[in-house]
Length: 218
Ligand SMILES: [Zn+2]
Ligand SMILES: [Zn+2]
Ligand SMILES: [Zn+2]
Figure 1 (cartoon, rainbow, N blue to C red):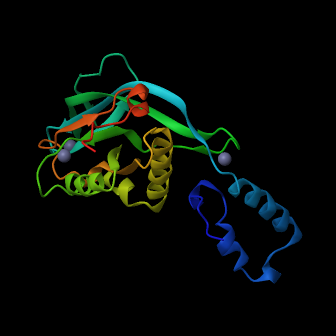
Figure 2: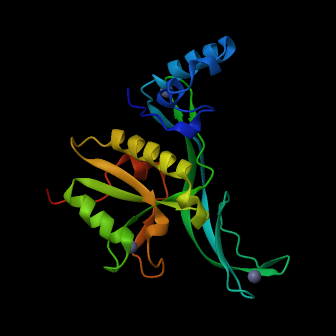
């Protein structure tokens, strides 16, 4: 049996790697826990959005060291005032309306926390050397639309659990699409070469996720 459930959302490993453990290492208490975990893993998850928060994805820059960072502000108006934090002087650079959420399975109650997610974006084409743009164009040929997950840190994109979470997100969006054969793939937004050049749109509303992203000429 192939393990299709993202591993890091559970405390243990997938059933496959568990069964490859030496049997002597498995006690009776562990055995019970195993059974429970396997029952959960058997769930064919049906994801829904949970803990939806509307706000702004705010980008700021330190005018001292030129460092840039983004955060999610759960406010009606994006905060624009400068402030000092240690040796940094953070200055408002820009913002986009965005939405933050988690995913929860309607059947088993399992929750996927998307803490590292600032929002989602689509790119309507930018430079040829932008990896995101290139992947999106190839995927369109395969009837797949690509969303970019805007993550707080570049490092987040390299974490294995992020890949698993983005796979669940892609599944969630793909299930929402009514056109048969169409899919959504969620990739780290960090694949965008230059956000200043990219013609990207931050999805600002839950309603936007429920409709198909781009009109395709198929
Ligand atoms: Zn489930
Ligand atoms: Zn600084
Ligand atoms: Zn782009």
